[in-house]
Length: 393
Image (cartoon, rainbow, N blue to C red; front, side, top):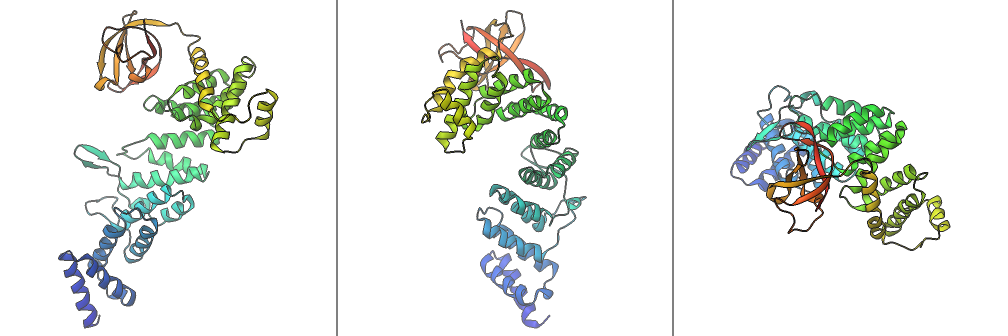
């Protein structure tokens, strides 16, 4: 190393220590281009952290993130943090940030290419703890970002394999999406029973509409149409934008075609109207059905059709269940939930959105009628019956 280079690198380190980041970066960039062989590990580490903190850590500009990450992966090697993650690795953090932002940008092929820059065996599987809250390990983040991209790319076998590996992590902070991807992959592979098993474990904790819709499809492919309809109806009734559930409405139409032809047509009209409103593709066959029925082909007000169908969904959902009566005995969670004591002496948890009365009626000792559905008691960690479709009486 010549004397000029040596002194310049020392100056860059001093600038960094004095928080003159731009000056330090300028020197490091200049000499990395001309004399990279003269950089010590300390110089490489300092330069990498400058780039990470300035262009990657809190940045949303994907091009800047990629440029900085490319340079960092040229300067440094990935540290083996599998046994000791005390000292963070700028290489690892940079690549993980790239994966996250590429996924946000729907650049899924690029995600798989950048993931190859990481050796997963070198990643720490130890979750971090801040103010009593657990945050995912670098290994969990790696699995999360890569399996997300793989599913989007329909690389089913690899996504299935990696998602199962992720569930074996000792300090896994959130298994939801790995279970979801396993279920999606299992459906694609024709393993419907396995898909249903994973989905039911999730739905007890996260009863979102898309979970119910996926179970409905699993049962449909199995030929268990009654179970499929039950979950499809439940998905339709779960709050979410109508346009998100367009495939659910189509599935319900297929399932009730023989027994309820008029309602099946109305579901197809709902799908048609949504697609027309959103300017989505409409299959010729669907247009023909609507035209043959003499319905308005220009109707974009799908919410009106959906409103008409809600009573049908409720009637169908609870047709085999006897209505129960009880009294609200407790309101909790800032008025977002409560408990009903049924005439059978049992206690039923309910969420505020299931109460169909006025705000004045939502109080202790109001007499109500209700149905029940399977839920999950988070405190006890067991399945339970929750009160739903609650009306004051």
